[in-house]
Length: 351
Length: 243
Image 1 (tube, rainbow over the protein chains, first blue to last red):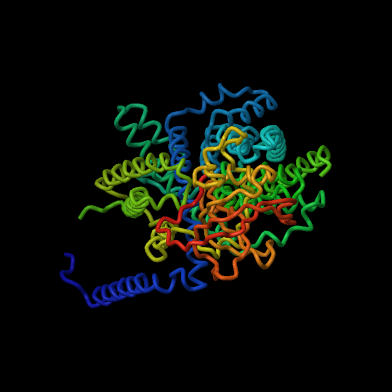
Image 2: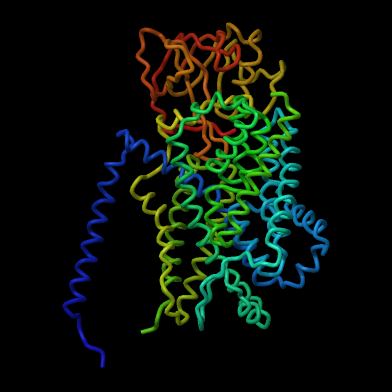
């Protein structure tokens, strides 16, 4: 028999919870006054929040789209189909994977979960990584934004597309070779006998379930998956956006002027900038543009290639997808490849 | 009592809060202080999708939920909502201008102006409008011979920056390229008029004459305004420029 009524313990915890809620409400209403733009501190909080929101709002549609595509891949595309489409030959397969970027207008925010599901489907690591790195750079929206950002210098679009393609292929082949025969993915803790699954699991059960059910059920399943995936990715976006906007407010650009013209140092600096400032691959072209007068062309190119591959948001998601060893290797290889790309381009431009 | 799927419940609440907040931004028009208007349609679509997802999640709640642990990281999703309520973000303040840098109008000109385009010139006076701000400013910058001595009518806020000589300020606007995080300052230098106290951040409508000066920061010659008449205004719509 369950005991009736509220016990003493329950009552105390209830009161406590009520007090906490009242306290938070109080802070919320008065917090507005503390944080009003008139005060200097309030200014900072206000601006950081505005920029934080803007990054999230800008990326939101793309994350939704990415989560949806990812869910669809997980639920409806079988391993065999994908294995059929991509050429078996390592080199051709990798190039094909990179070229997929032209038809996959997916933002870098969403490409990581999609890649994870592709690897789970059996795509070899080299092709999956090439795909993951190339798509944010080669997608038509990014290239268009690069074209507008570098209106007076349209060759930048070619540099970004070509350099990005080559870099992605190189990184993919390298890491595929390093990790031959190993499992690169983090295993999620599995729970037994879950009637409601979490996204990112194998979803074998879902696919089997779906195969027999009607359209309505398929749609519901896909929607449910999308919601889960979306929430997962959103967490990382929030984290990254917070750091990115704080950086924007607290760090002034004039600190870096003399190093801008040094051939090698400028590339390293721009790679760091790309890590910290590159928001969505569609927007970072405009940020890169603002550095054009102060930094070597090769370093700007490195920014444009490195940014979509690695940044704060990305790192968190990658860390959640790949095991530490693979993540470390990825980071190092990407940095080296982008540095080389930047140096090569600097040779052509006597800046 | 049925065991409710707790994670699903949290997600539904959070997604609903997002849907409400985004709807507020869309309907109030405040969204333009966060992202470029060309992105608005995508956010409308996203809004519909989120509402759809919320409904689906609600349907899933009815199903007997499992006793799975509450995902603590979903709490992070509430951060933007809490921030939105407490801080009320919106227009950037002048303090943000310092780190954002000044944009070169030439990068954002929407059209190339040739000698036949004179619709923004009236009575030998260049009249700036928000839609073509960058194109006009860029033309002013590259054709000093054409514009020297002409009148000018322009609106903006006062911003003193260290790249201009002490007796000048930049009459500026916020230029939103993609979103608030990459917004920059764009503007035109103005010679201080002794009789008027120009405070940083105040909005003015200026009538003046276009002159040219050599600026190190602009790598050459750039227009500068000699004020004839300054009118302090209180714009209720502190509009950004959207190239």
